[in-house]
Amino acid sequence: MKRYFVFIIGITCLLLTACSNNSESNGKNNKEEKPVEEAKADFPQAESDAAAIVKEEQGTLIESGKQSINPDKVLENIPSSVNVEEAYNGLVSMLHADYSDVNEAYENYNSEFMDLSKKEEKVEEENVVILLDSSGSMAGQVNGGTKMDLAKDALKRFSSSLPEDANVLLRAYGHKGSNADGDKELSCSSNEVFYDLGTFDEQTFNQALSRFEPTGWTPLGDAIHSVQSDLNGKTGESVKNNVYIVSDGVETCDGDPVEEAKNLHQSDLDVTVNIIGFNVDTEGRKQLEDAADAGGGVYKTVNSKVELNKTLDQLLDEAHQSINQSNQVLHQQGQILQ
Image (cartoon, rainbow, N blue to C red; front, side, top):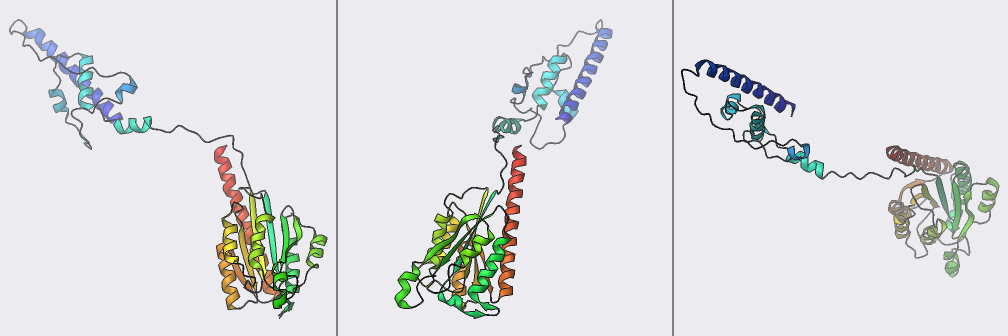
């Protein structure tokens, strides 16, 4: 745009000089020659208002993408007898740039602003739900002791490592009856909270773990489904919900842990379902892997006390990293809104 204005000023100066020279020449020769009638200027009046200027049509000498204009051609179209205003009108009519695209963008500009009153949010509530398989097979021996004893010790250590303001809930399933066919109905209905959702208290949590032993069948799907009610109302960007399942085998009570994990993850609770397979066979591993994947979490296989503790520590670290990343994103959003 500056280039065109400089060009217009230059052309105007040339025109004024030409007009001045022509006037002097006429003064010297008016006694000898009769004045020749010049062509009259017939240029449209140039707009002076900015809103009108940007809507004027493109100049007659301006072509799309053209980078230079011949000054002689411009002068040929402006009579030498014009005054300054007429010369300006002529230059504008020939050299006016096309502002239609810019003007359209300006007129269609969306001037709506974000709600600056929105407060910065962060993950302020962390809820951890532990589901412990208490079916009869958890009484089996592995390197370091029985699977149930090792699981309980590892969960004590895991829960004590949670942030002080985190909430934890302990639910066991399959802890009633036996794994005999006659006790299937009783065992498959055993799915119970032993530590209500709240901050960690070591003595109360340890007492809760001592209240059940491995005896029956494996209603894993029903246990996952129960988390919906365990975390009822725990929703929103400032809430993080994680489930940790320790199990040594497949569902044996006709439930569908994969579908239940998927439903839980896709609910408004946005729960992440993580599963540790403790000394599981191929069939059990496949189902537990699928359930963790459907629940948006991870699956890990362990076969000893050391592996179990290491895996729980790793999952806890990953959960905290996820919370920190969420807080960073929410903090950045809050800064944008300030």
